[in-house]
Length: 131
Image (tube, rainbow, N blue to C red; front, side):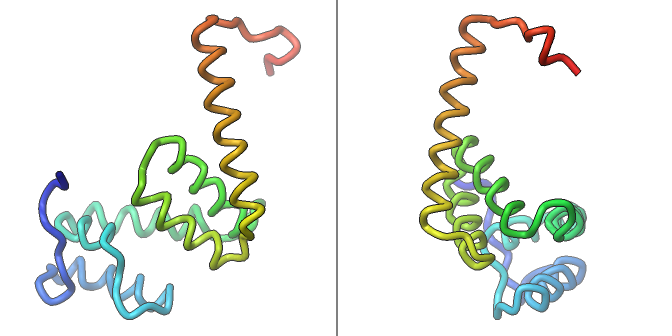
């Protein structure tokens, strides 16, 4: 069961409305998605997350599509169905193909399996791998 209710634009605090306006403008959408409406209950948190998202997700050493695929991979690994749906759509909007999404989820599965073995067997890090 979700915690709290979604805050639509009409009932949002002025601080939350300002963030919603920025998101709608930046993404060219008529409304923000439910994640932002949930966060609108706490405008300070919403503002901080929006600012951090803009900073981290802008193209840099990694292009926008790669960053979105990484976010999606973490969302899948964490079992966040909402984030998986949202960032699948965003990754495709940024050019990710079905084949890239399929390879990404295979990597997630492989990493989770390998991590499980390493955790279970209590493997020490090889000297050659220590930085």
